[in-house]
Picture 1: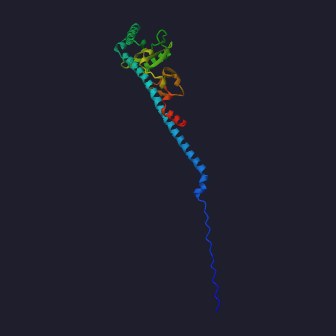
Picture 2: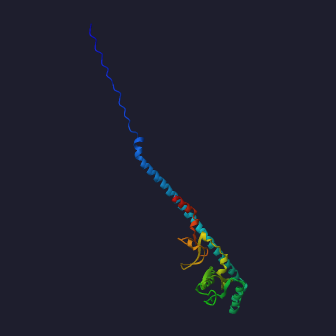
Picture 3: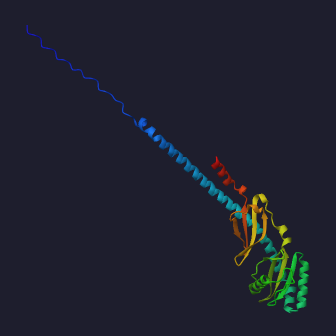
Length: 273
């Protein structure tokens, strides 16, 4: 019999090797963690900074509103009193009896009329009637008739534009008003009245010391002078908040107390935390 053909040897194919490739999650995360953490800190700090800036801006607006309002309130009170006395003197200057005595031009009659007016005005320290162009310095009155008063008289004679002013003499303050005395078609003279400012002060509001400090200022020729103040001067820090008055030479500057800055205090507390 024929020999049997040998059987083919079956080749064994080994199973393919499997390797685990590193994933993005397991490979890069440990490397990026510090950077991610740093970015988060930067974002948080940036947010805090923006929040603080918003608080600071709001605080500044709040203080500006408070400061301007406080200054305007005190200045408004002074101007109200000044305009009240200005209107009073203006009404007296239109009295036919005063117009008549200046038309007559008799000095004794003019002085007598001025004395009568002074008795009718308890707060007045000086009352003078001047025929047009006759005013001159007088050191015997209280306060004296000086260049400041003569300038007011000149403006009143020109166009009745003299505004109330506060003058200081012997450490006392006086509110002076000058009004034109007119007849139809021309000015025949002026009426000058000075009032004791100490008797006007009780009509002014008082500022509680814990709320700040306010100054009322009168400025001529670029030279400011404080004519009244209220509150605690310890709060007089920085530039304060300045407002101008309707009477052009009057202004007020208000210094709010730091304790009134609620937003600023809240921001400082938050930042401290």
